[in-house]
Amino acid sequence: MISFENIDKHDWLYALYLQYLNFAHNRVYYRNFYIINEENIPPKGEATIVIANHQNGLMDALAILHTLGRDGRQPVFIARGDIFKNPFLARIFRFLKIMPTFRSRDGDRSDVRSNLALYERAARVLKNGGTVVIFPEATHQHGHYMNTFKKGFCRIAFAAEELNDFHLGVKVLPLNIHYSNYFDFQSDLMVTAGPAFTYEEFFDLYKEKPNDAYLALNEKARARVKEITPDIDIPEYYNEIEALTHMMSEPYLRRKKLKPHYLPNEKDAAMTIIANLRHFKDEQEPAFNTLMEQTREYLSLLRTHGLHHWVINRKLSIFRLVLRILLMLLSLPLFLFGYINNFVPTHITKFFTNKMKDPMLHSSVQYVVGTIAAFPVWYLLLLALAWIISKHFWIAIAYVALSGLSAFFVHYYKLACQKLLTVARATRLRHTAAYNTMSSLHKIIVGTMEGLLY
Image (cartoon, rainbow, N blue to C red; front, side):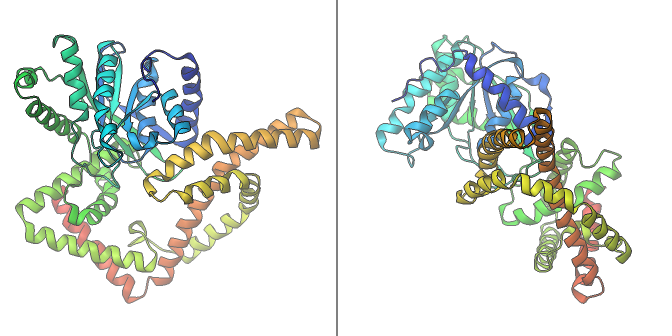
């Protein structure tokens, strides 16, 4: 088995690698990366367990890494054991300061029993003033909701205190990770830090009944993460409530004179909308159920006709549509330049992404295979080729720089095309019975939601 004995020792090679990851993550893959309430993060050198919601595979871990790594610390991550089955990958994960924890479904009983030694190692990381990161849900969720917390982090937390006669003062830091879009390149990402807390009130209980102490800490920790998380905890209406948060976020923010299309504000709006809908269900369940059925019908019509909520009841003009088509045609040569010069790394990335069955791992593959591997290697090859052909180094540099910038243009051009097609469909349908039904439902739904929010 790979040794994790020195996993918390500062590694200069890892620190150098993090600089590259930091640039690729914060400046290339994501358009904006926000850290909210950074002052809640305990300083480097204080024993800290970080717990967070888990939605988006490796990207969640990277979000935390780039949040905590701003002060030079190198946190140790606890991840599910099945990803360590491949010896080559296991060595990579060890380099990245990731330790395994095994669930019963990941391996045999000997694997699960080995958790005790790994928990003790993680506890010693804390005893040395290190930072341990764990996702208590033990698996990523497919949406904005929280699952139950497992007890692994509680075992580590109490073990660390026990190693230091219950005087270590371990801080538990709750984080929320929130994305504007799980899958798209150049989306926005934010990490919100809740107030760090201690758990000395459970020490006496732990000495008498450890399992009861685990449950008590688990409950407290989950409540602290939930406070900063948009948690759609009405599963039978998850899709409808999520759609309503998207529909109402912008008008809600404009009504409150807050900046729309700014992820921290959008997250706050989503939490307000979810809380109001939860209260609506508790107080007026028949009316709530009616709203959900109307929203479900509305979403079904949108899917059938290939439309999105933002285009319904929007002013639609043939003149504007034609003008947008002309602008797209005029910029088509730039798109073709970018598409051709980025064809190889784009399709290498797509090849590996399509092999990943779990969609919540797609962005992880896009980032690892594309952003930090395929595209940089391709641009080095392109630089060599352009230098050989042009015989001028700076011409080759300029060509590669334009190729890299054009990759962003290609991405936004495709998004513009998708919006243009949506507007074109809505323009074609605007005088039909189906569109009138969608328009009426939209007005009813918005009217009901305005009554709840204002």
